[in-house]
Each structure stands twice: as structure tokens, then as C-alpha cells.
Image (tube, rainbow, N blue to C red; front, side, top):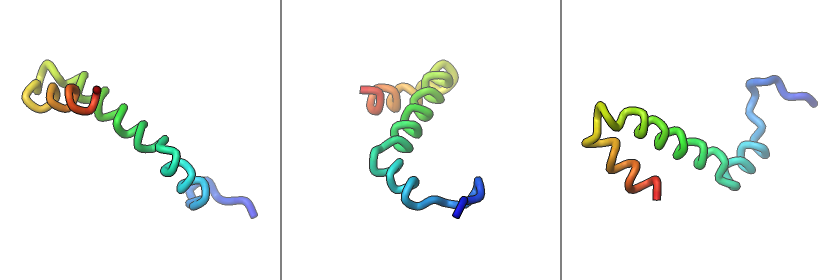
Length: 54
């Protein structure tokens, strides 16, 4: 059976979560956004970069 593009595939979703791919992508996205906004909002961006970016 072929899955439609938007139907969940729980085995693959679990595998991605288990291996941390989604989490790493999310953290990378947060760090990129914090870095991009660090000049405008250093009071929240810099602590994120210092804490998560270690």
C-alpha cells in the first residue's frame, strides 16, 4: 500500500524522532533565528545562543 504524501508513516516518524533528527533540526532552527535576531533582541537571543549553542 502506498501512502499519500501527507499521511503519517508512524514507523518513519518514530525512527526520525528516535534518532534525534527532528530535534536537531529544531534546535538548529532556534539557534539560527536567535543569531539572526541577536542585534535586535540581545536580552533573549544571547542567553539562548550561550546555553543551547554549547
